[in-house]
Image (cartoon, rainbow, N blue to C red; front, side, top):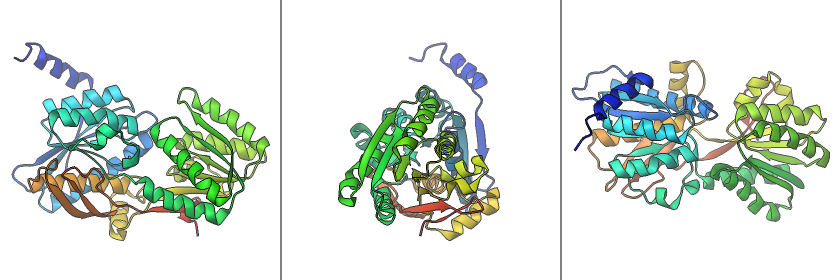
Length: 364
């Protein structure tokens, strides 16, 4: 029996928590309705906004092809509690048929039991399958188009073999995404003759102060290479402090280098900085994206596009993803998932470095 105050609570929630409804124009009779639980605010906002642009482009293009889709957007504010509230609203009030979201790993993990409870497909465009919990990987309703650690390992190994550092320091947040990257470099280090002189898995509370302190400490230890994984604003602050102290190691990071360079306003500071990024296989996607938004696709834009493309096409073809496989072609290559296969995309990682103009170019 439904509680008599249920609909009043839903109404109040809708008023207090505004929803963005994005509906691409086209001509299909019954639109598919999907939700996006996206980090539009909080520390994950950069990546959230990036994958949302890709998702919105897929919605628009599919509508133009006759698959009319309504996209309802909720901001999780990089907060797992907000993921729960947004997910429940999208399912119970908006009656969506599938959801995309989970910008960071703990946000995706918060959505997994909800997708299982409601039996509704959920796709995260940013999280490698390797960092997901055992329970999430066994959830037949949960999927990812995120760059796998297998691909990241290949790119990291190529960079480290080329640079030949002897002494390295590892700095990353104490969350699965950060820990697994530091673990990977520690695993590669012995065979490459690299000594790990320091490893710090920092907590997010007061991490900007922690990174400033670490910059001073590492400048004195003079490593040949520093791996630093953090958001772009903290990366910019950390690297400026390292260079201010006259240290000049290589900087290795993942997926935040472009925004950090832009924020600094000084591309020359980043001449020895390298970022590991997902590779976009489709050149036409990049040109279409730039025509739509006026800039090149940023990190996770292609993965957001592929998540929406896969989900909407499967729903349009009436595929029950929890029990049936589905295959289509996306911006990052072939997409194949469903029927217990969590990892949809087979992506490739690429190493990029900053040019004199501040744009990123291939490392080699």
